[in-house]
Length: 453
Image (cartoon, rainbow, N blue to C red; front, side):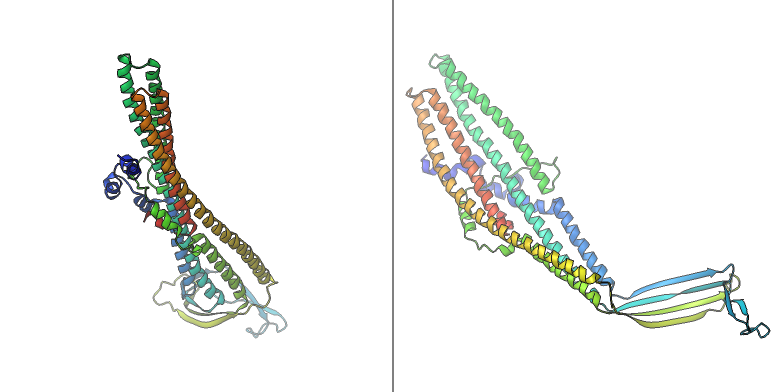
């Protein structure tokens, strides 16, 4: 096979058929499926969605304060001693001293009262501002959920790549392990026929043992990284998670990412700060609304009964109806400059947030520029590693052939095998670096959801 045809097939050979793996759901989870599961099961997203629901109920609570407030009430009084009242003498009793004081008891020992009250807010500037703030708060928590989802997608992608990278390292070792096994078999036969030295045979066995130890260590590392990926996805750690082979040989997609419009307004962290600034402005308006008058209407309908003993359940007992309607006007006049100072505090908080916004915008722009630079460098390095891998494969094949012909020592074969393994590891590692740079670039522009498209 020609060397130039080897690289396009490397991932197919080592990853076991990418196209079929992506389509066959039974073969494992693709990156897109991992992200979909993570968005459904991640605990942080669930908590953020609960914050959304809570904000919705808070808005409804505020809305309810502007609706009619109806309540029923009842009062039972049993005066063991009816309260005495003093009146000028002679008012009720002509025989009393006009210059004296008559003490009498107004009222009866027992009374019962029951009725309904209704209050209706007619005008309150604070209520109107509160409604708008509640709706803005709902939008704020929706943005927080979106930002949390964005972070989870990014974390899943990076951990997915981490697992795949470790699996690629293991596949790389397995490929070299197979080569050494075949070489060991050849040397063993030659040694048994006195055609090779025992030291050469033992040297290959030592390298083989070292490779097997590395493979065992990588197996453990794959398990650890897979478990962390499950945690990010919100899956039980004890559950099985098998990943499909991923086609990393799609540099054209990475090049397309470099050409996308860097509209940083799509970043949810900047939108969250904008919404916070809006909430600060509404808070100041809410404090200022305390200078406005409030108007409320009210009505009361009740029935009263009076008696010297508890006989209210008697059908012959007489009940007296009372009713009332009215309007209450409250006009604030002076509050000791409390509102003035609260407004000043609110403006300071808003100014502090403006500084945070400026820093966030600068950080977003820097993140984008760094991500673009990282992507370009990663693609350039990948091209260099690809050329180096082709060269290492050529050197290994030629050295192996020379050794078989007795024109090259075993040390050259082992050195070329080590160089090939390192070149392939560097190539796979650089592929992961390209995909990580792609994730960083998507995130820097607030488009991380496109990573699995």
